[in-house]
Length: 127
Image 1 (cartoon, one colour):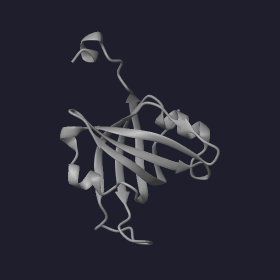
Image 2 (cartoon, rainbow, N blue to C red):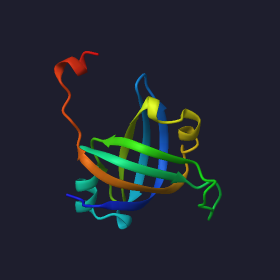
Image 3 (cartoon, one colour):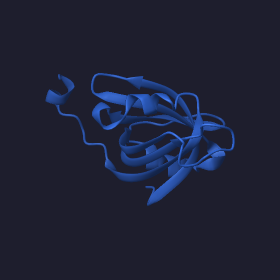
């Protein structure tokens, strides 16, 4: 299991919004994060996240769009050169306009594993 805070370079993919959730797709190069660390950090994990998207090439400062919050990462897709996963936030905890600025951008995110994702009860699934 991954311990402590990890800061990772990333490419942010699509952004989607549901009734109660906001999802950010993320791609990470395998050279930037070992497989064992990725699995321990990103599979079935509730994470404390700080993500920043670059606004211009080589620019990464306080003006960059930022998301800070708690997100779930359920599964990890492993490719030849990269990993893909989604960070799912509570819709009420993120600003939709800010999150939309992440689509197709590169940047960084810091992730700290807080716990496993609690299992859904049957009543949760029916809501």
